[in-house]
Image (cartoon, rainbow, N blue to C red):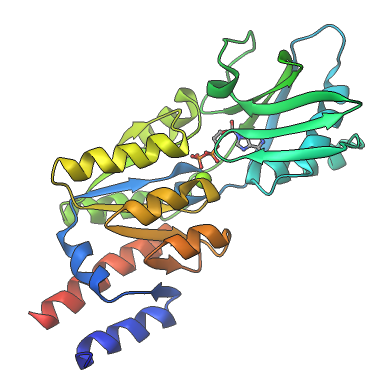
Length: 282
Ligand code: ADP
Ligand code: MG
């Protein structure tokens, strides 16, 4: 039988947009000492604005680059994709027609246009340095054609309002936050610096998974908070996996807790609820 107090707390959770799949997570949450947080879409809104498009090839101007970028993003549901497509439409630039596109989770998009392979990927995946003006805190993706860089797009994203507050409660509960992001050093440092927390940049989905594994092997109890397809393996591995947002089904399926409203403030409510539930049980 389920103790009454726990079932009450669980339904209370559901009313606030918290879905708790397994009651054990309340206890595990109160025992947790580390929280790994994804950046994009979790701590930040994920509503990117295109800040600049820079050409890296004399054969392409900015509008031509934008047309290719918007075309290749047609195959992606990443927040970056949406912002590039919207920006092209604002600039009256028509996306070119890709014959095929494929999303590489945590890396970017690959596609074929006029029998040529194009990629729009993170700086880490591109792997070489590029000669553009680096805007503070910007996320940067690089467009390549047959491996050669044609141009770069710089994008800006904002912190969610409740992210800062969440850091205060984590500190209060003895949970150390670490932000792990696939984004570049510059962007990661901007967000983590504002929040005053530790971070890891240029993290592939596998790196995030390995980070949790190594913390667990040191005896840490780890909560992972993420939203994307790329976070699913980490959400499943963590002691408590929290999927934020109604976005990605895979993330939701892999998590123990789902916050349907995408608010870091709801993580705070969930933690408070865990402590309340647990103290009533003991
Ligand atoms: P995060 O870990 O912050 O959620 P992701 O793992 O989703 O970030 O992405 C890591 C990086 O890969 C992004 O910062 C971006 O440079 C690149 N990237 C991912 N998806 C796309 C896309 N659809 N278009 C362009 N770049 C992308
Ligand atoms: Mg993400």
